[in-house]
Length: 116
Image (cartoon, rainbow, N blue to C red; front, top):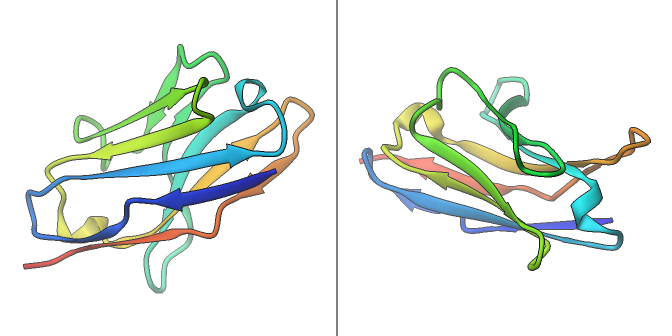
């Protein structure tokens, strides 16, 4: 499995970004997908998760109502729409795939910087 993130960048507080993660190697629709982030000096944390069928989502309290995770199985892609961004959202964002047998795969990460 290969995961390739894109869409990161620099944005002012209150701005928006959409991250994309393209999945390849196996059957995308069989994997639960999630986004994590890691800020300097902090542990990696779950930002948002999405089940295989996409019917159930989970968000960190800090992003609830501002971020939306979605998937397009036809494009083998998972998205993270981020709005009302805050400086504390600054981090490297990682895409993660979880298979039914417990296999976990990570992308290389994309930097998001929120600063005025």
